[in-house]
Image (tube, rainbow, N blue to C red; front, top):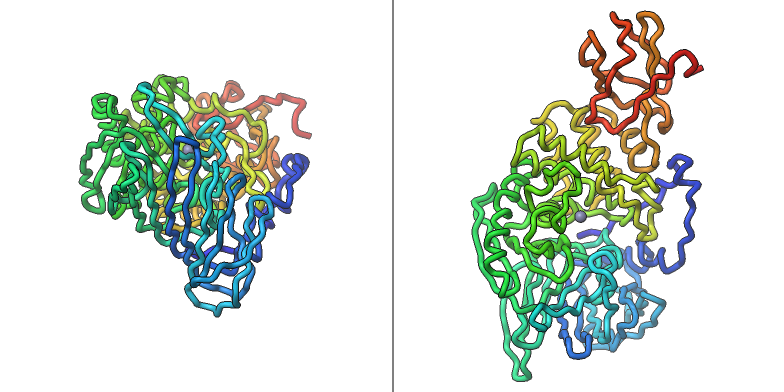
Length: 551
Ligand SMILES: [Zn+2]
């Protein structure tokens, strides 16, 4: 897919709390997280990845053929590959090219200047012992594990860290290939499962087998995965919105029975998400769920599963309501990413809320599908126990920075609130489905998502997004009763904050207020009006400021 030139202007408009929290970023962060001149001139169309995996010494070796279209003729090309992996050679049209390493970057000098529109391929040969994951999937890399019988069990997980931790590519989120081959060679009898569909299996004389997988759709780099182990296999079919979807399941062989029970949750999960978000995005590539030695990851069409066949999040309920124990967190959350993260992908890591806020919200939606709308709302109110308000959800752009973990529960909370503002479930569903058709298989900025939602909701939500994504402030509804006049306003908010809020006023009933930072007043019939209650679907606080507040 076409890379986008991203203008890092957002920092300028951020309110003080984030601006004050300045961080230091290095040149390496900029090379990793921005569309450098050595990246912007070429558009990846195909990755042809071939990797031999050797668990005996935790090493890998292989090559990636990078096919690209020339957007702007230049001769210097940035390819990313993280040490300690070494580049053996870079080859184009049979000629070895010169290159130099600069930290995680391989700067290649092409033999000639291409023409606009040309399609070229450059092949990078490499080898080494890739970074071992310290705590996958969060602190990732290669996972060299063994199962309970001591057999090899290998996986990759590298969100944030980047795919260049194990294979050479343009490690920039805004440029995805249109399709990709992933040919992984592993020692027998391990079975390797990667993304998309298995095209061929080739046994070699040296006791290894190559599993050639192919993804026919754009895929973000961090989703490309190796999963090799003593897998059993079973399959199912979903009669879905866009036809028949093949479901392939790969548990460890001795977990076949457990998987056959637990993975029955996949079909209702997909049905629920198709209803709310639109057709599963990858019918041609199918859906797979693969048991992994780490907890899980949204690897496109090859979801990693390590939740031990338990409901909840490792058997716990992140909402504190008990509702999260009604379903398997990893199946639901990671599958939601097929829409939120894989179909619609952030261009910059700073906008990871697009992935996680919607995936968190999808947990509430699944609860609603299974147990009703009130249960879904209770789940979304419950997940607020995980909100820390430690720092903003959106960090600096252009440096591959990660924001607060609040992107999960607080981001989901924000979306649940926006649904209250929309106050029309059919329209809300149209917005969620519309995002998935409008930005189908694209990389986007958070701003595009925000603008779309405001436009379709018919409400300017910009300050709602600014409040909850770029500050740690919780809006406070201040109010005071003077005779029969109830005054109210917002405090602790970004300039211009104007979110509506629903309140229950004794003897008056439910009212939608449209507070701003300025006091407004309404006539109320009761001296008990000061006992008003804010609808708990809104993540705000309320305070009776009596006679002294607000001057
Ligand atoms: Zn997630």
